[in-house]
Image: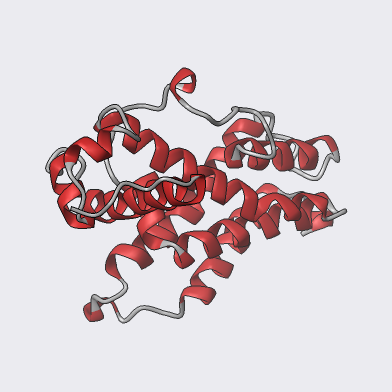
Length: 211
């Protein structure tokens, strides 16, 4: 059996390794099918060692999601500095897609794998914090476009806009992640599909004068 990590750096390294291996197993086999013992065996440690870091599988899953959601929010944070709100909204969609396609296993577990509902009290992340909450980032950007009077007059619900934009980009990304190898579709380039989705959605939302 490998020696127990002793330094803070070694403990953090092992915690990261547990998270990375568990994420891979959860994505490939489903959360319910994977045991803590199996995760421990994969990294060469005992199940007892795993429980020193995570009380149970749910707390491990929550830690993975917290890690990955924070990584997404961090990747998008600089986009919030773009001055023009419409450009900012476009850039946020592209940034979200870039993260999804760069880290497909992270994205699969975050948005494409069934698991128990998010409970804020069990998370280390703060909701409605632009440093940590990517959905709040999107809502904030959409609300700023709304306040700038750029949307069509019949659009009165910024949350509905944010969720629709999210759904559109998610659809393109999830199809790319799960089906890009299916040659019978004769897929167009992923960049072209993302641009088309954003263009169609945003043009339908904005006033004619800002399209």
